[in-house]
View 1: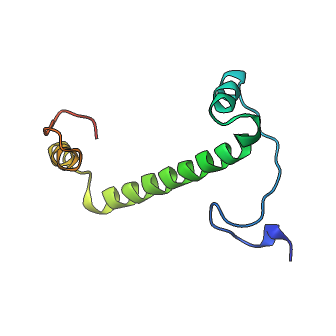
View 2: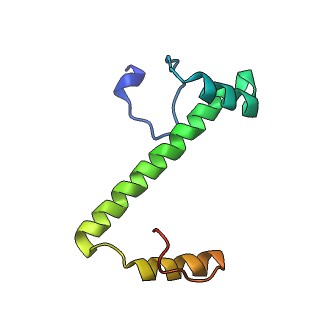
Length: 93
C-alpha cells in the first residue's frame, strides 16, 4: 500500500519532499531564525499551526451557525478574565 493511500494526521507519517516557492524576504527571515538546515522543520511547524487555526475557524463558524455569534461584550469580558486585563467591550474579537 502506498503512503498516498493512508491518511495521517498533521505531524505524523513519513516525510515527503516537495518544492515550495517563497518570496526572498520570507525565506531570508526564516533562515535568520532557524539557519539553512532548519527551514523544512520550521515550515512543517508553521503548516501544522495553520491547519489548527483553519480547523478552529471551521469549528467557530459551525458553532455560530447553531448558536449565533458571540456578543462582543461577552468576548471582551472573557478575554479580560483570561489575560488579567480590563474588559474592553469595543475590542475586536
